[in-house]
Image 1 (cartoon, rainbow, N blue to C red):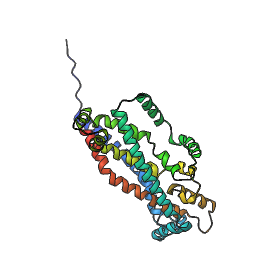
Image 2: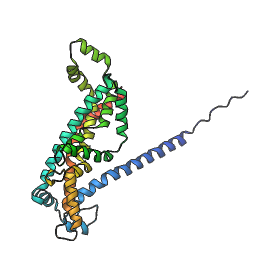
Image 3: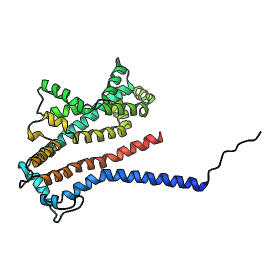
Image 4: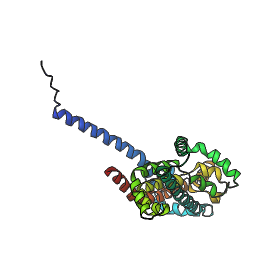
Length: 298
C-alpha cells in the first residue's frame, strides 16, 4: 500500500502570494486613508480662500491670496457674533450629554453585569432591540415627549435624549463581566466596603478603558448631532454649530450671486468645528489604547 505524501509548496510561490497580499492590503489602506483625509484637506485648503477664490482656483489647492485669518475674523463677527454662541452651545450640549451619557451607561451597564433583579433578561433584550433602531427614527417620538414636557426650544430638549446611549450600556455590560470579578467584589464587601464605595474604589478604575471608549463615542455623537437640535430648537441663539452652519449654508444658497454668499464662512466654520473633536480624541486616546492593550493581554 503506497502512502501519498502532501505536496510541498515552493518557497518562491509562497513569498509571491505573501507579497501580493501585502500589496493589496496597502492599496486598500491607501484608499481608505484618502477617503477620510481628502475632505479634511479640502477644508484646510478652501478655508484660506475668499469667496471669489473659491470659484477661480483648484478645489484641492490654495488660492491666489491667503484669506484664512480674515475668514476666521468674519466667522466670529457675522450675525453679531452668532458663531461664538453656537460654539459655546455646542460645548455645553456636548459636555452635558457626553458625561451624562457616560454616567448613565456605566451605572446601568454595571448593574446588568453584576446584579440580578426581576425583568433583567427582558430589559436587556429590549436594550438590544433599541440598538437595532436607527437614531433618526426615534427623533419624532422624542419630539412628542419633549412637547408634552414643555421643553421644546430649551437646552433640555437636546441634552435629555443625549443621556440615553444603549450602545454605551451594552459595551460597559460586556466589559464589566470580564474585567470585574465576583471574587474581587466579594472581598471588598468582606472588608467592610458598601456597594457605593466598592463601585467607586474598585469597579470604576477597572472600567476606565471602556468608559473612555463610551465617552469618545458620546462626545463625537453629541458634537455632530444635527437632526435632533434642528427639530427641537427654533431660537437661533440656542443652535449648536451644526444647525448654525446649516442655516448659513441655506442662506448662501438662497443668496448665491449676491455680494456675501457666506460659503467661505461655512467652510472656515466647519474647519474650526472639528478642532475640539481632534483634541478630545488625542487626549482620550491614551486611555482607549491602554484598554485595548489590556484586553489583548487577557
